[in-house]
Amino acid sequence: MYSGNILEAIPRLPTDLQREIFKSIDIDTKLDLLLDNDDLVRWFTEQELSVVYKQAYLCKLFHYDNSRRRWLINTDFVDMLPKTTFYSYPISTILNIFENTILLTARHPVFDIIERLRMQDIGSNIVRLGLSIALMSNTDTFDMKFNYYIRKLAFNILIAMNVYKRTCIKSRKIREDQRIQNELERELVRAERMAMRKIEIEEERNRRLIEEEMERQRVVQAREYAIRIKEEAKQLIIAERIRNKRLKEERKVNLQREKEERRLLKTEQKAKIRQEKIDKQVVKTEEKLRRVQMRTAKKDLLRQKQNDKIENQTLNYISKLFRATRILNAE
View 1: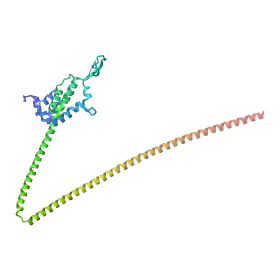
View 2 (view 1 turned 90 degrees about the vertical axis):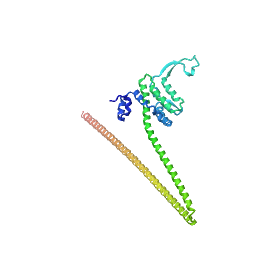
View 3 (view 1 turned 135 degrees about the horizontal axis):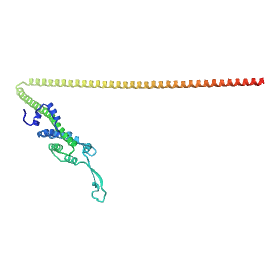
View 4 (view 1 turned 180 degrees about the horizontal axis):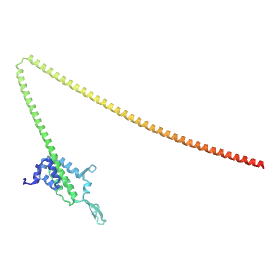
């Protein structure tokens, strides 16, 4: 059975198990566990701490006002605590006691402390970041929501520093490997130069023993070799330029083709839309013509009925007149 401090044994557990345990631990205990590692802040360089301070702390609580060219505390962060209202004299009329008092509003004093800490002239980022974390970890405004918010921010900063530390370890290892590789390369170049120098000295010594004609032949051969190498290098450069030019032209042709295809597609779409509009217009025109024809047919039918009615009335009138005439003649 383990008889030591349980909290001290947590870092030795697997990562997944640590994560599950941390879910059930309050924020203050989490901060105590992370703050026990005093070497975490001192492990980073000033430049790395500057990145941590700006990204993990400054950008979370403040925003940069380009017009004022200064960092301003976030309004939603200030609104997390109630403001104080009171009647007094404004600063602009503080010297004139005959002015009337007005209703003034002041934010919680803890924001002034945070603002003053940001504006404090602190040369070391280690001290600045340590003070900021301590302020968030130890400040108690008797507001559980606000206390949890700033402690959660401090906890996230420490977690981010641990993650950033692993990234920096990899980066430093890469830089160290690169430095060693560069030193090895420089040492190799120096050894090659020394070897070449020895060869040159040996050749110079041997040159004095060789006849003048043989020396001229060696110089000619060396020059021909250098010219050949230079010419081959030149041909390779020319071939590379030609290949790059061909690839560039192919890309240009492909882009032109794609542009033309897009233009044709847009033209087809516009033509299709235009044809649909024409079809709709034709349908509307036919509908209007049909309605006009129906109205004309109705008018013709009504006119025919009226004519039939008038004709019937006329016949009736003539018939009655004829009967009346017969009766008069009979009398």
